[in-house]
Image (cartoon, rainbow, N blue to C red):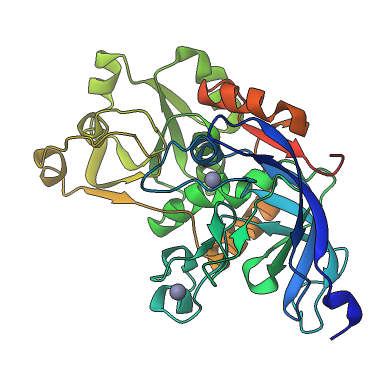
Length: 357
Ligand SMILES: [Zn+2]
Ligand SMILES: [Zn+2]
């Protein structure tokens, strides 16, 4: 091992020290670059709604929040050092990191490349620990990350990388169910909710060749929906429009995180229709069995995607020139970005410029 591989990497992040989520500079160390590791100089980190939930301890007790917390799992940057055994990356390559940075590597989900479902629990990018269950993980609101190359993604170089960062969570979260249920030409697809996830769902479904309708409560979003690639727009608060659209979709991607009536959305599906939930409402939602039985319908869920499929998604997005619509901020505006994200006042993802931080 070279000497350069044995020294921990001093770095700086932006951490919150309690659930009131005031961010401040935080000096810490990344582990030394091991034989299979790469060091990434982070350029952009997206702000995902789950960062806010964890920074503000809103998922406790299910997901405990540990402080200091450096959130961020939508990470893109440049490889500045590679370990002696690294084969996938060279210095200067662009790399991405998503929601997890390691897993047990032995269970069936790990073996088939859906590491997010690791039976032992994968190591999350932040607010978690390495697989030793001791070493805390700190996320992408920081200057550097050291990660095993197996859990890093290859990103094609482009002039502006800011719109790539959100693909690592919002992109794969929507891509995976669209692929699993064979969305493509000839399929009528509805995307419910036009936030960070929904806007990626629209772009990806349109790039896959489907006929896309946005379902929204706000008429003001119609122009944006069209600009993102949607072909139709349906106001879900309009009972006549909802009645007219009954039975008309093959697939419905539900990105809404507010409490809403699943039965009303299932009613929009045609024969053998599939509705996949990726939004996480804070309360349980009652389901009428008739909503599924009539029409042989499927209600399913989906959680991000494994490393192979995340790579496939990034390659698809590069080929079809799909990126997230972003608003770039400096780290001193994280709280403001959090407040605006909670109010859906962002088009469509905040991304922190870490390159100049
Ligand atoms: Zn996320
Ligand atoms: Zn596993």
